[in-house]
Image (cartoon, rainbow, N blue to C red; front, top):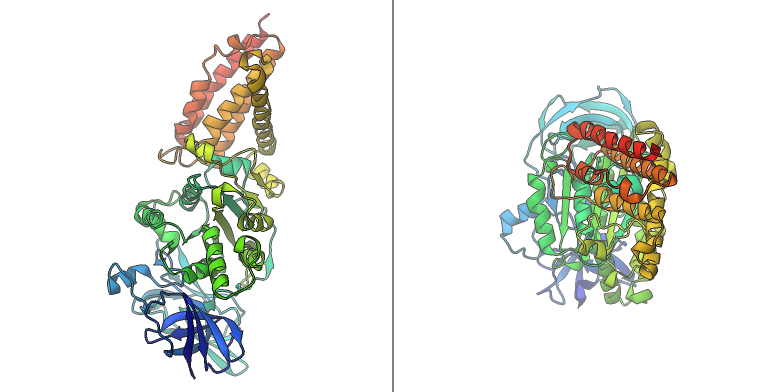
Length: 583
């Protein structure tokens, strides 16, 4: 039954006359059939938040209830695509509409005509459970798309398609359960605000390796973990998320540009197709999904965009993949919540944000996790959310609610960014609550002494901060030799280890093996020089061994040449030990 528009306030529309309206159902508004979602029901009226520009909409126009919640299409063709906040493919819209998108444009999220080569994995008569793999499609050069039994279905495979080419709307299997049959296609749908089910959540004891030394060494994030990246304008949030999208060892990347500036999303869209995956040498887009909802797009779709992103991530997690979601930035998403809440005339909370902000933030991050999926395999969805607090003040509500539910805090520092120190993560303010749980993995897979080297390096950097306060009072020359040595080693850690050059082909990514060797070498230098000082050798004599420039060049040394360079520096360390032995 159709309803009629009786009120319009920006993107919020009031409709009367809908038969049995339900919360979160999709409603098509006006003659252009704008997409909207029921967010409030008052008596016989439904309050609808419209995901498109409502310019030109009039009182009295029709509204049609779809009787379905906001859902996304799931199937082959997602990888390599660029969607808006409600999963409309921007490239298809460009072909249809040109540069400027008109309201009410209708484009299928997935291509209905393209044929995919399907390989069955089960035989007819097999009893299958929810989430079990029944076939596969080669989606890209890097990703095999696994066709699963729907999460709420089980039964006997009555019929399975032969190997061949099929569109996403053709039947590839028929499932029978209690004399009821269910057709299985390559495409399914799933409501974005509902988390996809898993058998059990697992402990976060495997790191998501990023190739960024300050993250992997000092403040690691677990596979299936959550991380917050708050920082003021220009501190490098987007730079870090770009690096993680390019270099993290997740199988699939979902990048959500939520309310970001158009030029930043343009840079992503221009650079990602040209990037090569470091592990395979294939195009990075062969394992990436981009969701672009820029600051000039409708604000309601911005609110939906992060749910679209996490639903797509859960879909690939359910195939057994490790997925990383980059949400940039959740502050813009929270601003959309605030604007919509104001239009709904809800009671405002702190700084005008709705009172349910904390719950919404928690619901989003809780959908991360490493889990045993329905098929019994293991998949993971990691969420890394950027936060843009006004003026860099993380005491504001979005930052505080985010830090309450995330377990990694990478504190970005504008002063470091201005000094061209990237990643501009402040090593004194950041933390990771995954460290203790990941130590066993590092000990087993990298080196037994990894945690000790990390803790020793962090202690050196913290001691440097204390000494610098003293330097402000008495000057460098008045410091004892031991403090001068700490400043010297801390400088090596800061400039030659934690700092990375994203524009250098070698330094932009450092394997964990290279990180360990570099960190161990710097600590060996520290130990050798400290031992020399303990024998009363003057620090000027110790520093006469030209070891620092060689360590500085290790950042730009390839993995193949690294061991040779390390041996040269180890000879210099032996020279320091000989000075130590002189009477």
